[in-house]
Amino acid sequence: MELFIKAVKMMSATGNIRLLHTPGHHGYSVKFSPFSPSLIAVAAGQNFGLSGGGSLLIMDLGLPGNGQVCCCQWQDGLFDLTWSEQNPKCVVTAAGDGSIQMWNTSQPQVPARVYKEHTREAACVDWSQTRGEHLFVSASWDSTIRLWDPNHQSSLVTLAGHEGLVYQAAWSPHLPGCVASASGDSTLRIWNVRRPQAGPSIVVRACAGGEVLSCDWSKYNQNLIVTSGTDCNICGWDLRQPALPVFVLQGHQYPARQVKCSPFQETQLASVSYDFTTRFWDHSQPSPCILAMEKHTEFVYGLDLSNHNENMLADCAWDQSVGVYNLGKLTPNP
Image (tube, rainbow, N blue to C red):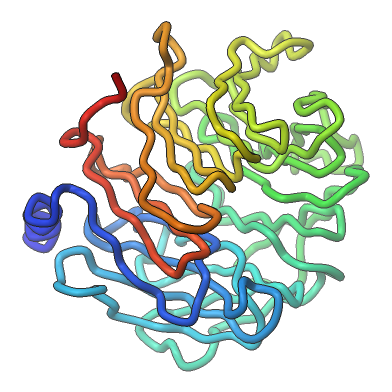
């Protein structure tokens, strides 16, 4: 907690926006630690992730400068990460060579375990947030989602059915065994990993003529899920009646790459885009875009909201920087 207080003070001293640099690496994913309020992890790749290696960077916001406390290196670009919900030293990453790495950040020289089943780029990893499930999922450009027990070398389940790249898979925070996936085949799909042979239980045409790039569950409503896509829109879907969205947020000028629902306010969420902006929204308001942050000079790719501090947001971009924002101290849009 002492380091977290220092982090907040540093934010105030830097105008409530702090930019951390990742020299030589272009950011793909950023996540706050579920254990320590001051720790963030960044997954990045050299040369925009198209060639060269990748790095997992652990940064402490309570320290000066970039606050880097750990660096784990892999032979290919790292496209996503997820913190373990059981072990504060454990982080899982997804790589461009299709492999999944499990890292012990106290021994960062080599991964503790490497999982190799995907046949194309591994785009996403997500650790289950429901009690009793010590599992994670991975999503890949090979059109599959795989379920893993971290203590086993082989996957437990393969979810197949998408007809395009799978960009994201996200566990429901409400329903054990329930996973959502976002795909280049224009669909959002809902799966029960306990019944993989049944296929998806719900298929939503969430981006007509385009790709669904991201999805996230509402933390307050088990039937509400939000998507973003190449149509630049952010849409909310009631899974009980998914034919039409319950809200559509417009404002991004280029595809919205990630969306994240607030863990504190039911109607608030954040998004990042290829238009170089990060936006914070309240879909219950007549003018829903509350904040538009324009601090990056390249595609903004990664996004997270802190579970410890209601006003803390982090993003990462291809301009080799990570932004950390104190939303409560920023001036709202007119």
